[in-house]
Image (tube, rainbow, N blue to C red):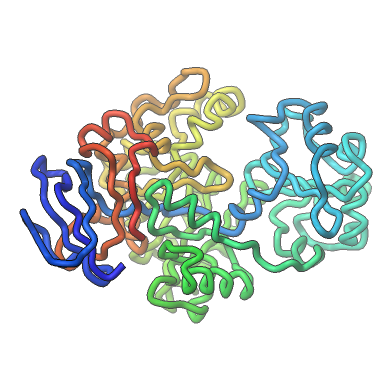
Length: 457
């Protein structure tokens, strides 16, 4: 596309305008624009808005999920369901079964023995829906040499025998599986475009060089048409005009809280070379430790908290004082809010996935999906931020709702500035745009992906 004219577009002002695009840039905005020989799209009064940014997802995990077996809701709810799903599934080229989305309500805390009972004929590895744990049956454990391994994430029984459960050991496991290379991202790029997403932050920690190169190649060839910001790449990793390196991802595992002094040292080392951090933080304890580390070494512009699943009310002022941006996922409330209401301490429920209290305290806030571990649809995520309703209809934190406009704007912030001002359609700006079927005021009455007519990445 060299030159494109979009006529009669709603730019959010209530007045229709024409928008001329040349060479990927918005060249002119006005009325009754005309140029011979250019492609013309009639917006018919539909909104033309900046492309959405998903500030936290995992590209290769999304691609892998598409080729995996669903081992949890909505299709698997019991041990017998899981056995049927695994039994019917085809093995991959190397004879393995790869499952995703498992939750303990299906068949309890799975280990090798439990998985052997459900399916022992082929090597099976199943990822917990949190993305933090893998479970292997005995054939899989034998294939990766689990009995002689010493990775700290290997769960063990009291006598030291591996149980088949692996915590945050993705790299270790990947090195011992057949090497088929990173999965193709073409379908992921197409899926993102369907939702109007033109930029993403890949939040995978410590990306392997092969994964970094695969993302760069996918963007360069157009297989992945989105701009990509990487949290798991070294500062000198491969980049391009459309692939950039962001803050450094730190995982504060809820299964193994960090040492305060070690965390403070790591943050200090990052800040000394001018790099902010992006800290995965989903527990109250880890959030308090993170703030204590910042009290020791100070914060740097661009430091961000990923998820912020539990932010105590009395910590909000500290978040603001340190200038932290929170990148959160209210979509989890619609997806698994009933589980939270059942399992989370009632005293903590009001602290889950805060939104309004952070905005009211002037804490920079961005919304995101955490796909594939959370629901990808940004329009559904906006609705979740607006209503905070669970599947059963319960409301989690009614005082934390955002307006439709606030939720929408949290998807319009730049990929490199998630807590910044919302982007607008302006002359000289990039033409990564989304054309909607109806005016914006109508779309925001009930945000839905059905409103997306065309995405220009």
